[in-house]
Length: 105
Length: 105
Image (cartoon, rainbow over all chains, first blue to last red; front, side, top):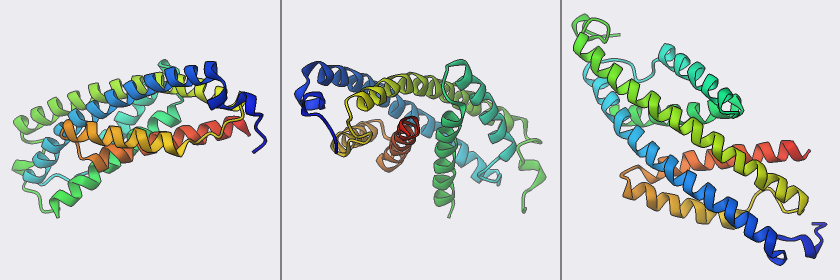
């Protein structure tokens, strides 16, 4: 790689400090996301159990589209790329459905 | 589908109420996740800019593995399947790297 040693992360304390500070914030946010996912999963586990008992299908495309549309609007307001927000939420939803299907079989 | 009409979501008010209540909580949690992603993305945008200016590679596998190990431990403490937590965080990280690479090219 064509890096100048004087500008690499390890040899420039001010850059390293800034990156460390950014990373500490990212770590805090990720910890919050993990805890929200834990809480979300507790609820979807109950939803899955309800759907199983009441013989409802694990996926609900109409509900899912409404969720996505609302979250895209929220992402836009928060200056987050809606494609990025949608991709993450769709990934979470699909992982949850996969878990429900596994629990069901 | 072999559903008994008496047990479907629409014809059983108590079930519908319970699902509505679960879904309202899921919607609140998803809104919180979107806002955390917006804040996280603001920071990774700065990290990406720093890395670009200092000619550092977009991905940092050692940092990533340390992040994942810590978040798996947090997931376990929060009674969240660590595989699920890891999958979501890896997806977020890979989307962010994809964005950095796009911004760089």
